[in-house]
Each structure stands twice: as structure tokens, then as C-alpha cells.
Length: 369
Ligand SMILES: *Cc1c(COP(=O)(O)O)cnc(C)c1O
Image (cartoon, rainbow, N blue to C red; front, side, top):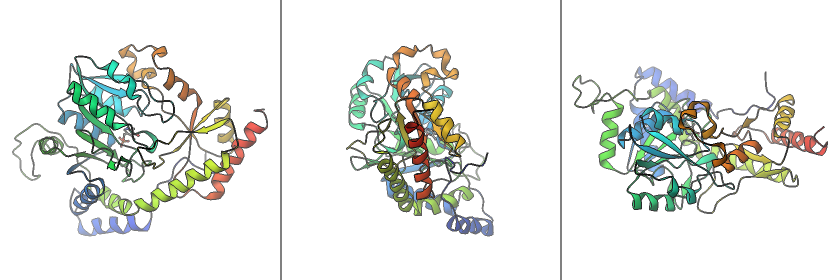
């Protein structure tokens, strides 16, 4: 179906095309000048000392976990409410993901509930900065120090998000950002791993490039795999990073317009904005008091593409083997049953947002007929 308002449209155009043309003309497709520039801009902007690229956010998490030596017999604490890759990347190392419920207001991991999930096997905590705001990192870092745990930040959705002035992904031992098509800045597929730790950086460099530091050599001092990107992707990425400010401002403006248009509708509420983080909206996640599924259908019939909230990890069929009980996650169950995401992409027009809000109001004011 062709949507009148799709969920997503990347903010790409002339600048990306021009950079791509340069790569083609230069006939250098693998990591090269654009990859270096991409990394430099990211390091400069985030303040990370070191950064390496990965094929996508999922593999960036996997690579980060490998660098931290997470594997069989280990446990990693992950919020129950996140995209599946936060936990599948843990499972693929052979370790066990351990789920923790979230804060109902801001949907990030409930820091009060982390300590009780720590066991002798716990190796790391993975806070996820969800929907464009930071998790509360100070208490997490404090616990990590107390219990001698590693911290890997999933900042896949959080380029441009700062926790008390520090870019997310640079606070723990390692942090990752995704450049998938629906993220704030995109290369189609892509990812980066940030760290301030030289030892981890060196490990990451070997792991990501076939166990050697320089491509072109066939001597592999360590075991590694291929986690590289291409210069075509990074050419798009460089253009995107240069537009970040514009992208951010447009997303915030769109988000605020939804808020003002829906403010009098008591069935709808927005997530809580925390004071220790800025906000770069990833979507417009709203909670509704009733009739979620019929509202989604009503919007779908009106040509508006919505997305439900992330499916709680403890309910995921692929994690059945962990044997979680549904009752242990009252908050993720509740928010999942009430939540939906509206589009916020930069190219969205004011009239489109007005149209969506009209349709939502119409649905509730008609008494959900
Ligand atoms: C998108 C996303 C990922 C995975 O990133 P990809 O680049 O799509 O592999 C991981 N965690 C979260 C929270 C995400 O939103």
C-alpha cells in the first residue's frame, strides 16, 4: 500500500549523490578517504578518543561484546524494552542476556532494578538509550564499579544525545551507534563503536579486520572477522553528519507540533523528558489509554503508517529458552499494550502532522466507533 504518510523517509539528496559520485570516479570502494573523514567527524562530535566502523549496529554490538571478552558462561544485563538486536548480539557470543524492567515514564532501564539482576556470572551491563534520550548513566557506572562489571552502551538510536554533557556511547567501556535507514543519520546500513580505552581499541581493530591491522597483508596475528563498511556508505554518512543539526532541528520541531496538537486529548500521552539528557526524537512514541489496536487500524485505513512499540524481550519467541515469567515485567507489558510510534522524520510536512493528529482526535472523539 502507498501510504499518505509513511513511517519513515531518510533525509537524503544532492549532498549524498555528490559524495557517491566522488567515490565512483575515484574507483575506490572499500574503506578509504570517506571512511576516515566519517570517523573523524564522529570522534570530534562525540568526544570519543577512538572509534571503529562496523557493518551495522547489531554487529557493532557483537564486536563490542567480543572486545570485552563476553562469551559462554557470562551474563549481560539488558533492558527488557529494546530492539531485539541488543539481546541477540549477547546471545550470539554464547552469553546469556538477562532482562530488567524499565522506567514507565522515560522507557529506559529501571536503574533501581539492575542490582537484583546481578549474579556471579554477570560480566556486563548494556544500557540502551531508547527513542532518543539517555539512560541514567551515573547510577549504572556506579554499580559497574562496585561489582567490577563492564558497560556497553547501545546508543543505536542516539546520535546527538548527550548525558550531562557527555555524548552517549562514550561513558561506558564501549558504546555503539547505528546508521541504519531509520536512525537519526544514516548510511543505509552501518555502525560505529566508540571507546576511550586504547587496549579495547586495539582489540577492536584486530577483530574487525581479519585479525590484522593493515589490509593487504596476508599475515594474521590474531583471529578476526570482516566487520568493515564501504566508502560508498561512508560517503553518504559524511553528507548525513554534516546535515545533523538540520535533521535534529526538524525532528524536534515535528515532535513539538504533535505535542501541541494533541495536548488536549486526554487519551494520549507522550514520554517523560528527563533533565539529564537532551532529546533527539527517534520516533514519536505515544501511549494511549484505550483501543490501541483499533486506533492503529484507523490510522492505517487513513494512509498513516504507524509502528508498535518494541515487543518486550522476555516475550520474544526466540528467547523462550530463557524461561522468563510474564508477571516479572509489569512495566514493559503495560507500555507495549498502550504504545505506538508516529512518524517524525525530517521531511515530514506540517500538513501531514496536522492530518495525523486530526485522525487521532476523530477516532477518540467519535467514541471509538
Ligand atoms: C537499530 C537498533 C539496533 C541495531 O542496529 P542495526 O544497524 O539496525 O543493526 C540495536 N539497538 C537498538 C536500540 C536499535 O534501535
